Length: 509
Image (cartoon, rainbow, N blue to C red; front, side, top):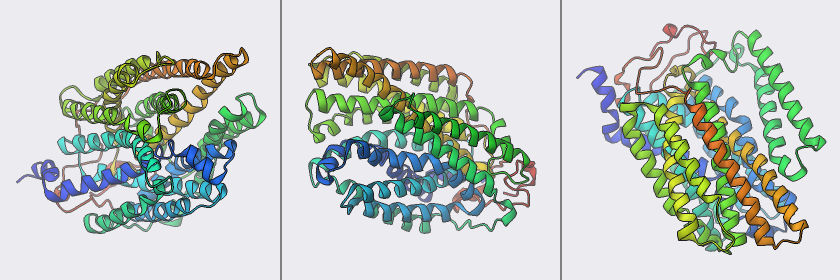
């Protein structure tokens, strides 16, 4: 059997299927934890007597450290070993989940959420880079990336569902207690399915100034975006945070151009379509992330849904995500990723526009379900398309960095969308309340404007996606067909110039 045939057949083997399921489980737990706490927030506030100002950090703390440390986590996994980083992140995630679940005050809970985000920032890029180096270009890679993207979207939706069901059942603490058993499964599976790819990078390969600058810049940016809806865009703290993020980013670019072994080799942005895929991810998930937030508030604060009912309301949308992702992953090899990302973003924009018409006395079957289903189909196509296009042509030695860039774009988009659209919704609602309009009417009108803006962002994402790579399964630069898929991840020995953007011919696979 030829090497190419062996490569293409790995996903059809029991080990290949188990490896994919295992990696998707990592994606599920990381993405779900970004949304699972949403519906539980009122219960958390009541039990721990958390102020409104601190309550937002139960949700935002995870986003802050997850997005802030993704680039560092992704690059270190390339240099030190992906399995090692995946295991370390999983253990940290499990311990911090227990800390959050047993929390008796707001400070402990927020600290747990911050550590959870750090663990996820280690797990996610390591897992995605293992996927892209284990399943090589061709049918296997397209199917594997399609599954990863579908699970990411499904997890975001089912996170809301699980949060509602768990909060309405055993209580909000079990939103965190469900994580450690899953983490144990991940650790066992990692030792059973993945080869030890531990690497011993030389101290000179660590760009410590670059790591400090980019991490501080990302933390400052996301912090400012998270705080902006609370304190205002014109507040000095918000402006200072944004300016600091920009200054640190400029300093980072200057540092990287002077480093022999940069943390982020800028040559990675010459990979066809990567920058466009990341930009599409930012704008698209500014729209998607805020849509979930406002629709959940509408269901509970206007329609009076219980946490359990609000969570169950997203199940059909989750099914739609799976359908959209499944159909799209089958079409990639024929038409490429670009048309499907564009079509998915436009379809999702139509669904969100439908939701922007929700009335004060709306019904789930007539006013919410159609829009959620249409949005879900589009979300499935966008997720698998962006993940595939963003990781398709990346060299194996930079897979962790590329994975981190794509996922950082996701987190940045969610934070950006909530910051912008919360301000829009709050301004409209406050204006109407000042006129003594009934609270349900004022809230719904604010949601209208925010959801309309979300739909516009999704249209903009479709326009940006026209510049993304139109991947159909072409080999990545420096990548050759290999039979390594039958034994586990590809082992990529690092030459002395690894991570610097050197000629891929120097890599031995």
